[in-house]
Image: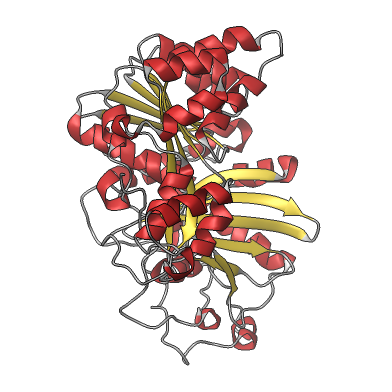
Length: 474
C-alpha cells in the first residue's frame, strides 16, 4: 500500500509567535527601493502586473504614471521597520494619533513567519489567521472599520480593479512580495461590509516527493494526452498538488505547458519544459477566450483549473481527445463522483454520449482531503482512480459498484479507495482513529480494515516523524 500523506504545515521552531497586536502599522508611503538582484520568473510576473490597467480601457493611467497608480506590493519595499519583538509594538491609540495605518504587507509578512495559510479581513471584525485549519483572532487588534478596509483595498488593488469591485462586488487578484511569498486575494461584500481573504502561497514550487504524494502521479503526468482531475473540498491542497505535478513535468519532459489561472498562484520558471502562464484579467480578458486560444498555441499540456461550466468541460474534452494532456479540478470528495459531476453539467438526453466521451478521455482522478495529524499539523489522504481498460468499460456502462471494487483491488495499478488511505495513516500513527472516522464515508468498513491489521483504533494515535518539507493547503 502506497504512502498517501504529506506534511502540510511546519511548526515555527526558531522563535516564539509574535502577538498580532504588536504588528506595527506604517504610513502609506509610496517610496520603493530594493537590493539589486537577478530577475526571476516571479519578478517577471510582478513586472507584468504593472501593465494590468492596460486591459481596463478608460482606466489606463497617463504615460509614465503606471508605478504611481498600480498597487503592487513592492511599492513599500524597504520602507517598513522590522516587525517589533513582543512588548515593543505601538498601541492602537498611539497609531491613530500619529495618523499611522496598519499595512497589508506587514500583516502578510508576519503571517508568513507564523506559518499561516490564510488571512481573513472583514469590516466589523478583528482580522483572523487560519493556522493548521483553525481560525485565530489577531490578539488585541482593532476591529476593521470601513475606512481601514478602504485603505487595505488601496494597498491591494489597482484603480481599475477597485472600480470593478464596486460594480460586481467580487474580485480575484494576486500579490507578490519578492523573496517572501505570493498571495491569492479574493475581495467580496458581506452584510457588514467589505471583506477579503488572502491565501499565502510559497514562492518555491513543491515537489511530488516533498509533499508525500502517491508515486503513481509521476507516471500519469507522462501520458501524451487525456484528462487528469484533482478533486477535493475547497482548501484541500488541489492547487499545490497540481503545481507539484507541473514541476515534475518541467524537470523531466520536453513539453510546452500552458496554464490559465485566475489568478496565477505558483510561478513556474521554464526548465526542460516551456511553461506559459496566463492570468485572467491580466493576460486575457476572459477565461474561455484563453482556453479556446490555447488549442492554437501548440501546447502539450494545459492546466485549466476548475471545470466550472459546460463551455470549460467541452473545450477540455476536445483538447484531451486531440492530443493534449489536460489538468482540471472539481469539488468532489471521491473519485467516482467526479465523473457524475461532469455528467451533471449536461442535459439528461446528452448524458449517454457524454459518458462515452468522458470515459474515453479520462486518464485518472485524484481525490484529496486534509486531516488533522496527531502532532497538530495536517496531512493529505488520497483516493485514486486510474482509467484502465476495465475501468473504462465500467465507466461507460455506469457500473459504479464494480468500478469501486476495481479501485479497491487495483493497488498494482496505483489505485486505492479513501478508506485504504485512512487505514494506512492510522496504522502509521499519523492520524487518530477519531480523525479517520470523521473523514470516512463508510465507518464500518474502515474499522474492519484497521482491526484486520491487528491494531486497536483507540490506541493508534502517536507522535510520528513527518517529511522535512510540506505545503500549505491551497
